[in-house]
Image (cartoon, rainbow, N blue to C red; front, side, top):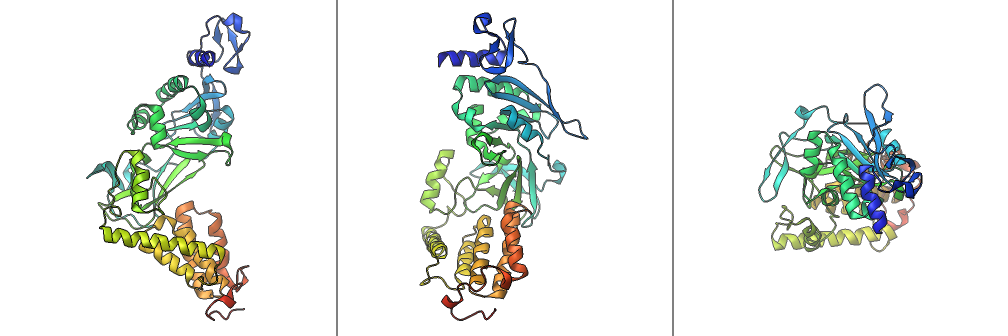
Length: 399
C-alpha cells in the first residue's frame, strides 16, 4: 500500500524518482511511457472532444492515477471538471448541454432564511410545473475511485481538479458545506449514472447552486438529473417570498425518524411540518400509517380492503400530507385501480392527473406518462379494464 500511495502522489506531479528501475511504463497509467524520469503526457493538455458548432473543448486526460484522470471544460456554464475514466469522460462530453438563459430570468434570489442560514426565496409566483433551474455539474467524480482511492492521493487529485475551474465555478464549489473537497462532495453532491446503471458509470455530481436549496419535509421542488444536467421544477404553486425547498431524505417517515436521519446534516429539522403541534404530528403520522396499509393492500390486491375508490383514497391522503413530489405514481395507481374496476370516467381523470405529475417529476418523456396517455385515451381498451369488477360495489358497466 505504501508503494501505491507513493506512486499516486508522484503521478499528480508527473515525476518518478528512479524511473529507470521501474521500466518503460508508468505504474499508475499504463498508457503513458516514462521519458527521462517523467510520465509522458502528464500535466499536458490534449483535446478530448470539440462540440460541433461551438468552441466547447474538453481538455484531458491529465494527472492520471491508474485509469482515473482529470478532464475539464471552462466554456460550459461556470466550468466543469470531471474526475473519472476516459471512457466515462467521452460519454459525458457527448451529452447535450442545457443551461438557463441567464441569471436575469431566474425567479428567485439567495437570502438569509431565519433558522436555516442561506436559502433560496421566490421573487414572484412560480407556478406548478414551471422549470426553475437547469444546471450542468461544476464537478463530477466517479464513485469507485472516490471511495477506494488512497485518501492522500485522492485529496491532491481533487485539489488539482478544483484549480481547473474558472474563478466563479471554483468559488461556488468551495462555498458549499464541508471541510475539504472530499467532505463537500460527500455532503452536497448527487448520485448519478452516466452509462446506464452500471457501477463503472456511477458518479457523484456536484451542483453548488442546487445545494443552496434547503431541506423541507414537505418540499415544493422536484428535481431530476437527465444525462448529467440537473433540472428543478415546481411541484406546486410557490408564492413570492416563500422559500424553495427540496428533500434530503425519504419522506414516508414519522417526524422522529425524519429528524433522526437529518441530524447527519448537522441540524434539527424545524420545517413547518416538523414544527407542528404534537396533536397535528400524531394526525400526520396516522395518515402515513394509513398510506402504508392502503399501498400494501393495493399491491397485493387484498379484496377485503380494496374497492374502486381505494386508489382515490390513497391520493387524498398524499394530498393532505402535501407530498406533492410523489403524486405521479400515486395518481397512476389510482387510475389503474379505477380501470381494474371498470370505472371509465375516474380512470381517465386520474390518468390525466398522473400525466401532468409524472412529467413534472421525470420530464416529458417519462415512460409511465406514456402509459397513462394510452389509458386516458381509451380506458376500455386498456389491458386492466374490468379485471376486478366483481370485487367492486357494482359500479362500472363498461365492456
